[in-house]
Length: 219
Image (cartoon, rainbow, N blue to C red; front, side, top):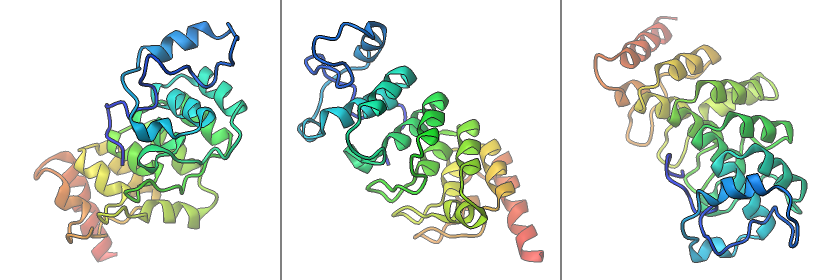
């Protein structure tokens, strides 16, 4: 999983021309300036990413929905292509909490099931960040009840489900949303820890999860 609140490399080099801006094209100057503000340095691995894909990733990472729309319109490959850390554009938009970008990507039918190199799906990233509206949008985008259940139960390489991530981040609204959608509070990760085990004791998140566990045992 990419690290929240840290730029991951796609919007990061003053010497790299933005992919979504055609050579000689002087349009979209405002978007160009916005994206420039996030540039730092590109690693060698990022330089191997196709220019059209890097444009999509850059826009998703910075939350520039107009630039993202332009980049998607000019993308030669799949919207679900991954780059650094195995992240797709939807992973990045969810990670940084950019709802307009998430909505656009969902409209373009970005996959909810794509996994990064840590086995995390976009829902993991949204839950880790505590982005309630984005979590709701992802749940609403599930194809059917079975698909929704699969999303809720998806475990990353550490065995953590989206509920584990929400619990660890003490995001009580997200925890409640996931539980109401059918997430299991009893699934353990690879260390045998349930979501309640990851929550701070005697917090609201812990109480909500503990109550859910007790209810699931008696039902």
